[in-house]
Length: 324
Image (cartoon, one colour):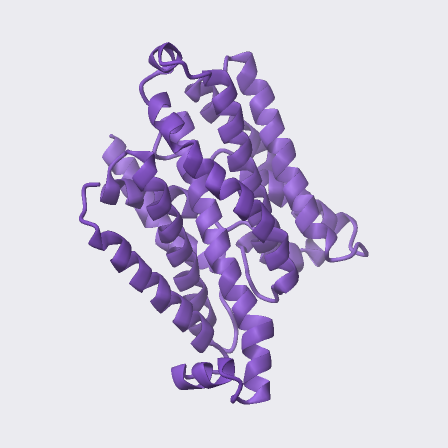
């Protein structure tokens, strides 16, 4: 690693700070002492209800969604070999968004629980289409990037068409597209948790393969790596992490772009070190962004996706400038 071992200590402290602020701040403020009393079984029952049924699942979702989106971005950047790649840039988030918007606006009587599954299916369809098209070009990094951008543009056009056509009922869809953790519950935590438990260790296990891919296809094949198969496995993992994250939180942008790049600056390009730092940074960014969105115009909320866009857009322009 380029930085000393203290890096993990600093990130852990930042994450703990973000977690505590997320639990404490909101329309109803809860002090650190009150949180301790509540979890010791001596607190106010109303505050206990707020913490356990609203803020705790929301905070856990911030951690998991941030970590999953950041890891998906790191995998895509490694596959495409471009630091500007991310789930929203190559269309995975837009595929999930299109499916969710279609359910919200075309089937307004559908149960709310269907929306996350629709979003996941939308991301999966986009990922399958991306793999099918890229396979025609032997899964080259450039074909993955261009195919994803083209598919994302098509899905974005579909979102705009459906939204404009049903403008009178578009408020719910627009809130979802902005990326929001408002109203999320333990049901959403249990929906995301199994995917994170399976996919995250798998990505850490495959981190060495990502390093080998950076050497080029010929060198990777010469070292015994099945380039085609490992790209399919990694792309599938990225699709799953993106799809389930967008399914529970909406389209939160820029996390998959800026967290891997920041981690790479801190640890260097070796994925064994970079991926854990990427996940921590993604969790920190989303958790802090959720806190900012809750307090900036309290008692109203700014969707967390808007906050991450305000943070991420300037950083994206900075990366574009560095690429010149």
